[in-house]
Image (cartoon, rainbow, N blue to C red; front, side):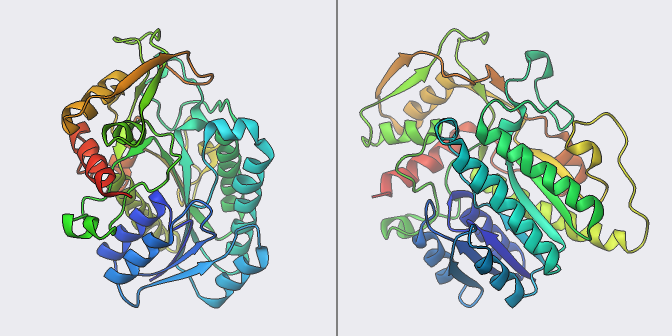
Length: 367
C-alpha cells in the first residue's frame, strides 16, 4: 500500500506516519515544504523503517509538483496534514489561511481525482463548531457549524469541497475533527531522546496549553497566562477535551481502514445518502465518506491542566491571569460515539497525567 502524507514531517503528520508504518505494510511518501515541519522527524522515521519512507520537499501551492508526485506513484490514499493552524494568526492574515487551507486543499483534491486517488483523509478541527451553546456539549457531528475565525472557516470550506466532489466522483474521504491534541510518542525511549531523536511537539512558538505549561515547567518560559477565569464553569476557566497524540494518530489508521472497507462495499451495492438532520457538511457525506470527531468525550479546565503539569513535573511556575481571548468557548468537548461505533478506533491513553508526562519527558530533552 502506498500513502502520501502532505505535511508529514509536522507534529501530527509524523506521529501518524509512525503509526501507519508500525501497523501496516505501507510505504509512505512525505510531501512537505518544512515551513512548520522538521526534517528530524522524517530522518527518525526513515531510520526506523529503512526503505519504506521517502521525502519530497515541495509546496502545496506548486500545483506542478503536486501533479508530478501523484502521477509518479499510484497512491492508495492521501492523508492531508499540510495547513496553517494558528487561530490568532488566521485573524491577522485571513488571505494566507484561505490560500493555504482552502485553495491548496482544493487543488490537491483536484489532482487526486485526475490521477485516480480514491481515498483522502483530511485534518479538520473542532474550530468548525465555533462557540457552541452549553446545551450542545458534548458536540457531535450533527452540531451546527458556526466557525468564528478564518482558521475554522477555512477548514469548514474544505470539508464542503470534499463533500461536493465525493458526491460526483469516484473519490471518498474521511474528515477528522481534532480536539486539543497534546503529548509525545509513547514509543520514545530515554536513549532516543538523549540523542535528540523521537517524536513530539518541536515547534518553539506553539500555542497549545499543555505545550506552553511544560515549557514553563522546564524553565523555557518564565510564565504563562490563563485567559479568563469568569466562565460559567466550576473553576471559572475554559474546559477542553485533551487527546493524546498517539490516539489521534491511530484515528487516522482507523479512518484508512474505514475507507478501504467502504471501497470494497461500493463495488457490491449502491451507495445511498444518509438520513437525519446533520449539519450542512455531513448531511450529504454519503455512506462511502464520513466525518468523525476525535476526542475523549471528557474535558479538563485550564486550571486543572496547569495543576496537573505542576504535579507531574514537581515544578512550580508563574501563572498570571489575563483577559478572555475573543472566540474562546467556555466548554468544548467531543462527542465521540460515532467514531467509536463506526470504526475500529480504540484510544489507549485517555488519562491527563499520561498525556502530560509524555509531553514533559519530551520537553526535558528537547533542545
